[in-house]
Length: 289
Image 1 (tube, rainbow, N blue to C red):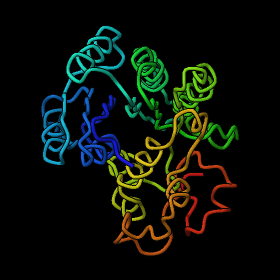
Image 2 (image 1 turned 90 degrees about the horizontal axis):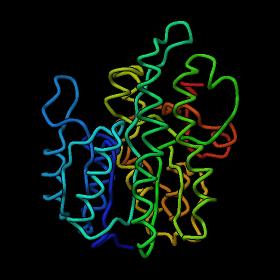
Image 3 (image 1 turned 180 degrees about the vertical axis):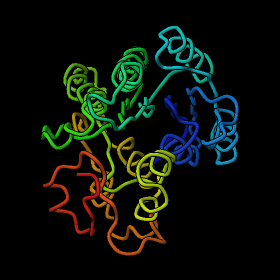
Image 4 (image 1 turned 135 degrees about the vertical axis):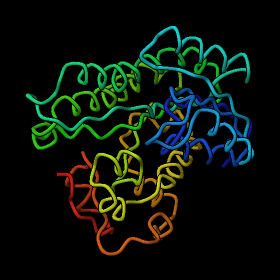
C-alpha cells in the first residue's frame, strides 16, 4: 500500500482531520493541495494553509497551499487548475471542509443556515464536480466525504435540523455520485468516526475538555482514509464507512494508540447508527444521541 506520487485535493485541510489525512499521505511521498480559508493565524484555531504545507513537506510530501473559500465557484476552479498545473492531475478528492451550528429551528438564523449548506452540501458538490474530470483520468480515483451514514431517525434532526440537513447533504452526494460515476471507476465513499474526535470543534463547541478526554485523535480517521484510498476504486464505492470498522478489516485490533489517555468509555459521535454501536467491541457512551 502506498500513495507515493499520488495527488490529493483536500478542502479545509489546514488543521484537524483534514491535516491528519494530508500528513498520512505525505509520509508516502504524496502531493497534497490544501484548499482552505485560513491564511493568517486565528486566535482560537490552530494552523494556516502555510503551516500545513510546511508540515506536509517535513513529513515527506509535496504541498500546494491555496487560499480557497469553497463557497466561491471561481476560487474552487482556480484551486483545482493550480493543482493540475503543479502536479499533473488529481487522484483523490477529500471533502473535509464543514461548518457546524447545533441550534434548534427557532434559534438558527438564516445566515448560519446558509453558511452550513453552502460549505457542507454545496461545497462538497462543487469540489467533487470540479475534480471529477481529472479523476476520470486517474488510475485509482477516489472521492472521500467526511460525512455520516444516512441514518434517518428523528433523534438526529430534532435538536439541530439545519446542521443535520447540511451534513446529510454531503452523504447524499456519496449516495448519488457513487452510482453516477461507477462506470468511470471513480470510488465515492463517506467516512465517519465511531467516537468523538479531539478537534477544535469538540473543544470549542461540543463539550470542551470533558469530551476531548473521551475522544480519539484525528489520526484514526487518517489511517482509515489511507486504507480506503489504497483499495481498488471499482470495488470500493458507495460505502458509508466507520473508521474503526475500516481498520478492523485491515487487521487492527488495538486502538489505544488513538486515545492513550482516555479512561473509561469513549464518547460516541453524532449520527452513528445504533447497530454500529451494538456490534462494536469498543466501550462507547452514546453522548450525542
